Amino acid sequence: MHRGQTMPSPTDVNLPSRSCTAVVGLQWGDEGKGKVVDLLTPGFDAVVRYNGGANAGHSVVVKGERYALHLVPSGILSAGKLAVIGNGVVVDPEVLLKELDGLASRGVDVSGLVISDRAHVVMPYHKAEDVAREEMRSFAGAPGIGNPESHQAIGTTKRGIGPCYADKAYRATAVRVGDLLRPEMLKKKLEPTCFIKNALLKGLGSTSTFSAREMLDWAIPLGQRLKPCIRDTTYLLHDMLASGKRLLFEGANAALLDVDHGTHPFVTSSSTTVLGIPAGTGVPGGRIGVVLGVVKAYSTRVGNGPLPTEQINDIGNRIRERGREFGTTTGRPRRVGWLDLVAVKYSAMLNGATHLSIMLLDVLSGFDELRICTAYRVDGVQTDRFVPDADLLDRAEPVYTAVRGWSEDLTACRKRSDLPSGARAYLDHIEQAVGVPIGIVSVGPDRAQTIVEM
Ligand code: GDP
Ligand code: IMO
Ligand code: MG
Image 1 (tube, helix red, strand yellow):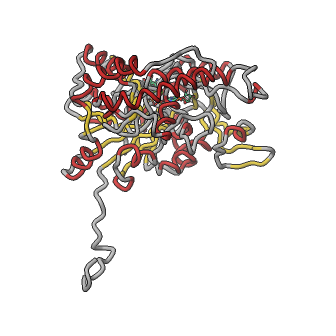
Image 2 (tube, rainbow, N blue to C red):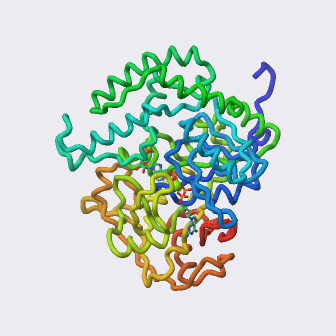
Image 3 (cartoon, rainbow, N blue to C red):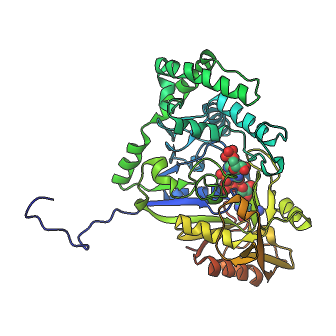
């Protein structure tokens, strides 16, 4: 501010235009984020991933064709849009190229893909370390592990996600996408790194070993193939915003798997909420005007860790079968439970959700009565606050509100008023308890099987 210049009054201050929307999961993943992103993509110029890696599995069904996306943003399925992998993503270049080849062979135009030169590379030794650490945690007789019951494996996707993010934090052993284009520098980095990794893997009981030569032979050709897509995506996104373009951020994993705010230690290794967008893309959070919190009409979880409303019984089996609850990435059967609004309300708060998108409502048809968790009892004390600590949450007993179900098939409903009264009451209950309006209701996997009232 120059001398003599007056301070702008609050009304003169030009607030940045909020041209960005975020789609984020409010439970333990697999809420249907891919479907929502695909649905919204036509209104945007780019779809941007900011976190996670090939641990994500986003299924999109277009005209009866099912696509499973892991690293490629779901926006790739809409022609003419940019699909951006931001710096916060961890990229396995081999998995990415396979995915691109698979999409191209089905006629999808993948020329809109852009990858940040600052995204980190998941190397083959990261996957070996992920497997070795998980095996060590599952092995009752492992040294230093006292009570095997309380030291379960996390149940990771074994995609090398945790070890890659750990190397990002360690810095010296990290490999970034831009490094794939600099063989001499990469060689210097990989020699000490492979030495450290081999010692570490041996200590973890693994027989895998890796040489810098092998790693270079693997990485350099992959880098060459990806070269046309590799860019500084931070400037790209800011240039787009400056010219009035609109960005859609696609969250991977979900709030309760967030490394800071989830059910630690049974979480993934990235910031999965909107709080991860600024760090994972370079776009400030103030740019985000709409936050769509995606919620499955019941709860699921893959991998280990607490799921307070879990139903290991006929109810759970019935929902799993009807909802085809088997992982998109690993094929593992998903654990299933009643809707947990204590958890959803917490995640909506963390994300600043402006709207909810309620998914797979059709799966709940045919129950006389449904249950919704509205509070927990922890060590005899009732609370409506979430407990983001695995040990404490394990002791939380859900307090349920029973609501009547509905028998009708919902898959042809296209307006909220088309839904049977039981389903409408279920949605009203969610809206009231979470305090956020529902903008989208999904009644089937297809694009067309959606109610949009925003
Ligand atoms: P994401 O990881 O959040 O993108 O979710 P996933 O794709 O892993 O899992 C959601 C699954 O539910 C996919 O198989 C979708 O095709 C499917 N799906 C999405 N919305 C609906 C819906 O409203 N009804 C039904 N029956 N399936 C849906
Ligand atoms: P989308 O984007 C469901 C879970 C894993 C495991 C834990 C840690 O499809 O919703 P990781 O491999 O990340 O170290 O595993 O997190 N997990 C997911 N569960 N959906 C996902 O992604 C997930 N990404 C990670 O099952 O329990
Ligand atoms: Mg998924």
